[in-house]
Length: 335
Image (cartoon, rainbow, N blue to C red; front, side, top):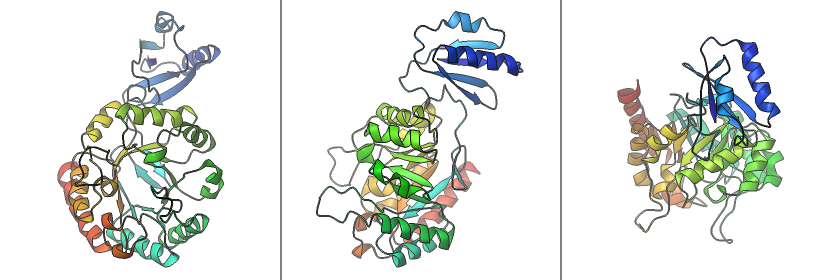
């Protein structure tokens, strides 16, 4: 349920309304939009009489939300959310590009890539310290040592860092991480989502599961938000289909679809979506043109010798060319 507040409403009366809702075990979430103030009601509203609420002087109207996700719903929060990622904004027209290697392999490697992607215009640095791999024999990251190397790259370049959390027992190692990524394989690890949501207010980059519907993605975001952390960024990274020519099938239509359904920022991962470096550039440009709030792109200084995902990693030169094309698209369509 959402409650639309009249323009110029008395603040004391609004506070009284919030107190009334809390007395009925309903948590009121106030969204002060550019045109409308909305109170979203989180909790069991089945026995809350809409007529009683609508009769209050400060209330313009009461609407039921049919969708199962509430906090992530655009009806709940009409204006785009803008998420602050260590000083870099994303959402609400603020476009951001996250770039870096699939995994941190050495301090020299991550610092080299960080400097290259920053010079090309990237606004955040990605790199995996803990890596989920299909095979137990594949390289699974350097763990804490990898996080320390990421922090060194952050000090060298000033770029906020984005890296994946796989197990909540490692959360204290992420104190200096700017954005915590929840990967596709953990999108429906509901205990992890609740723990992250209640423990930290850091931005969470939530990747769509490889077989997940949009509603399932939004319900996973809801787990984080309902637990107390509303700083969620959604990521489309392709889904599994019968197609074998690419690593996954990228559904670019989800960008405008999600922008209609939710206020949360939406970024696109053209690297995991396609699996091949030559496809990353055109797909990144297309995602930009269709209105994504950002991109997350894999860049490696020596892709043939990368310990994972070398085939889909751009070289710094390729990334620079892609960034130039992205800038042209944004200037043409969104300036």
